[in-house]
Length: 228
Image (cartoon, rainbow, N blue to C red; front, side, top):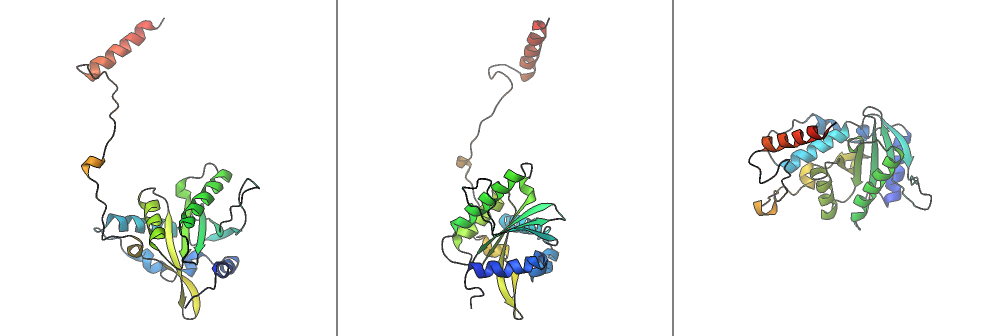
C-alpha cells in the first residue's frame, strides 16, 4: 500500500513534523538500534564506508531547526533551486539537506539536485566544508541508479549521505534507515588491475645526476653566490 499519493503529500507530512519541532532522530524507528550496533571488524569495505557515513550523518539528527522548506535558495533570481528541506543541526553546526523521492521515475535528478543545493548553500557560506553538509535521501523506491549514486558519493567522493524510507508502524508513518547491504552490491567487490593504475613521479633533482643531495647542494650554492 502506498503511504503517500505523491511527493507533495510526503513533503506536507514531513513539514508538519519539522514545524512541531520533531527531530529526524525521533522519526526514525531503528535510530538507536542502528547507532548502538557494533561496527564489524571485518567484512566488505563498501559496507563499512556506508555505515560510517550513516553514523556521521546521524550525529546531526537530534536537534534540528527548519531553515527552508521548498523555497528557492538561488542567489540568481532567474534560477530556481528548491530543496525539499534545509535544516540546521546545532549539535554539529552542520547543514542538513533533505531530498524526497516518491516515484519510480527518473532517479538521476536526485543526485544532481543534491549537488546543486549543496553548492548553492556554500555560496551563502563560502567557508562551509563538505564535512559540514549532511545529505539525506528519503525515498519509497531504491532503483539501481539511485543506489549506485549513493555508493559513488560515499565511497569515492567521501560525502556524507544517509538513506531513509517511510514506513508504517502501529498506524503511524515514520522513517527507517535503509540497511547499507540493501544499497551496496557486496557480491561484486571492487577490483583494480595493476595495468589500470598509472601516474607521474615528480623529482626535485636532475634525472641524470648521481645523487639528489649533490644536485640540491649545487643549486643552493648557486643561489647563494648570486646574492649581493
